[in-house]
Length: 235
Image (cartoon, rainbow, N blue to C red; front, side, top):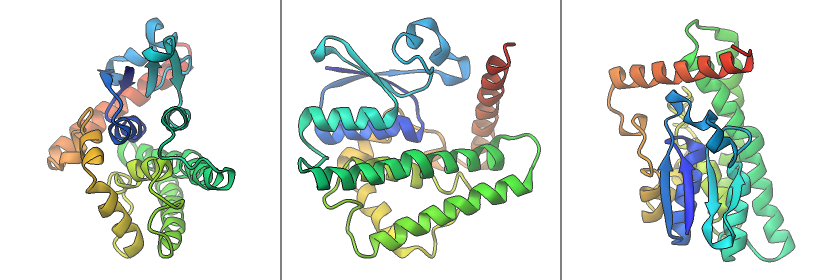
């Protein structure tokens, strides 16, 4: 049994999707990020970095794993699925996983901050991060022209990248002219386990509830950002 500590973010959904794909029994423990639950001492004992997601594998002596990429690797290695066993196949998956962890995730995250959450509009920063997101999307699109999935068969690399790229509108980046990327997004999004995973827990912005709900969501995220800055500053 897995205990999943998560929230409705791309990094959180990566893990719920993987758990659903692997048909592993798990219990969801949603954290209220706006209230700072991820900074409470009990959670810091699980993840010293105070971020979601994190898991505790109850079947392995209450073994805790944090960092979404590390969790994906752990789950795949434990089950022998979604990750090839041969060294070169495994390397291909890990390369695209690192592409998401070091590129797609950070760049889209920064685009979100400057495009959605900062109270003042800093256009050079918006242009910088949206442009880099667009460049990375182009890398994916060109690769997917010759490949159905990112690294051979469907894998944790697809899960990791898809969970972020699917939110491109929130980052203010279009994929309208990236046909291969659109095909891949739709193909993975149609998987039953993926449909369930992205609603565990559900995200308000995924429902396209309109501009007012988007504004409220951005305001809540802005408060979380300010909270994080205050904590870093020792306030």
